[in-house]
Length: 86
Image: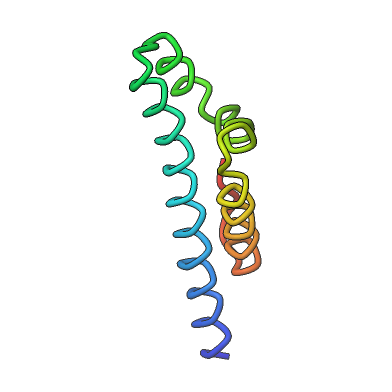
């Protein structure tokens, strides 16, 4: 019983970590590319609409594999009994 609790805790930690790191890398990459272009309006829009940026940006920037890895991390987090991330 304790081993199952430890396993669930590890799944939540690893899955949540993979999701969080991947999420911030995708959003950071999107924002940084706009900063380098000097397009400050897009920087603001990408930050305000970050859920949409997270879902769309990886497919156009070549980070699709990171997006899929992030989704797997979220699923692992959910399997471990984590609360839904809103």
